[in-house]
Length: 296
Image (cartoon, rainbow, N blue to C red):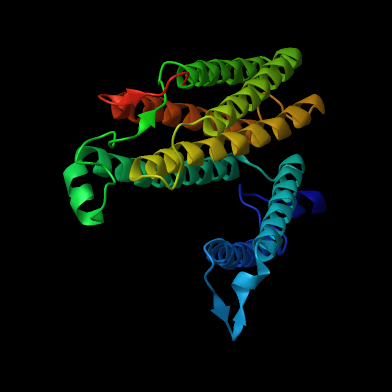
């Protein structure tokens, strides 16, 4: 009888007091200050705070904030996994975790909307950009005069195929998990992680050999911001799936309880879809009328 009264009669639970929200906010604040100070240092400027030039600290402030954020992510998510293993992720709690992941992805969509907006604004109205900048940024055409662009059907197409295959692989892993096929789950996740790493290497090679730079023109700025931000998400998604791979090898997921894997799969499919828009809009449509760089 005492056990029956002690057992919760509802689908909610109160989590233990946690330091993670405070540490996450502190780390993000330090990263923000450090990032501004670092950028001011790179351009030779100053960033005075309480009479001290924080630009002189170079990138150390940013790295301290980054380490706090990474530690917070590890600790917070470890606690979440522990709560799930203890049976606290009931039907209602799991539903709310899914709502949280959906809202997070929606916020990420708005980030990419900003980059696409900047690119389309410059591409659709090159005359206005040219007049506002009062310099030879576009020459009134898009791609801008004097800019050699990447061949969209070379490395970008190769990376598109890689991401589409990775999306297929993670779906295979998900179906294997639902059918309690542990070998298929591990193999599908391993293949997805491998393809994600390959994508990052190909994009790094493309950046190294790009015929234009970030600072050369508005074309370079909008190109590298959009594709670079996506590349960062690929790296994050690859790490996310790598953690899921280690957990799958340890037998953590079950057909009925696997939100961590499901969230990673959603994130990866989001990365896939964004890349398709990037490939179609920036690489293909944005290159119409431009001069393809030899060998790119």
